[in-house]
Length: 410
Picture 1 (cartoon, rainbow, N blue to C red):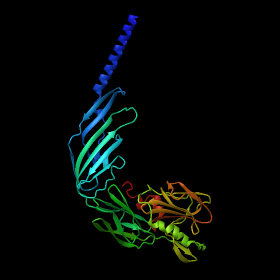
Picture 2: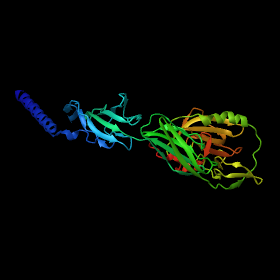
Picture 3: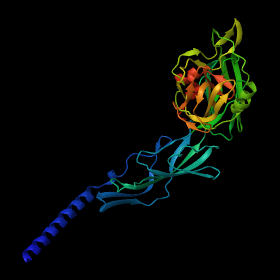
Picture 4: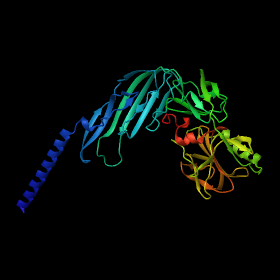
């Protein structure tokens, strides 16, 4: 019995020595290369940590190695930014972050990972940025857990710049206008082409100018105002040859006032945020029987121009949302039959007329390709795309060549 006990004690001692030796070996081999290596950058400059606290697993969750450096007063000088708003890039290892930017007037702004690049600069001068980047997991950690701290100063000297997606546009197109730099107000654009909504971007603002089918050809001088900035911008419009198409005279069904009361108020209201992404989609698989802008002729006489696309949709075909957005009208009107209006934000809306049944509901959020109703035989299926009250060619948005797709990541 004594021998057995002695043997057991020896085994336990040997196991302890082996485990201890293994732990010691692994501990000695666990170096700073076990910490996250990919750098945090700001304005394409690598930020240098001025403090950290990391725990690295050595042997499961039993043995850990700690790397610490108390946060010090070192402030990294990044220089002056004159061309673009600096962007903070957080590597994939960052699971959480705390960001604070202090402006020249002493005001502070704080954010996390999701909104770290949404700060709007309203003045030139000297700024401070403090970042704490964490890597933390709820499960038993398999890698280093902890944080790096960064503190940097920089100077902003940005002159506002105005950029058009194109300086020459054809009738039926959309032109994006981008305003970037240090801005001390919200922009507005005075133009005879139509109403322009602006949305905030990482570097300033983006707006969308409608150039409808009958916009006057030639140079259009627009006045952009944003706080203390007033600048004239010229857009040259060229004429599009749309051609003619013989159509049958519309039956007098009435309902004009009902249509005006239901649809016209939508021209001046809507979501301020951009809800679409990428190219638009055809609402129907049917062939286009009447293209945008085509002059409609009834018995040889001009009878207006097409403000949208007319589709030869098969009766019963499911009609789908051309892009993501919010349904702001869903119902049946005497003049247009089943009608669905989708707000894509920034003044951009899709108008679907001529549905047999409407399955979408007002207030519903839809994604590209979601069913909104079915086609019938009583009305033609018409798809209009408008910015405010001005129609533009849906085909360009469907092809992805519209100003609506200009620098979408901004």
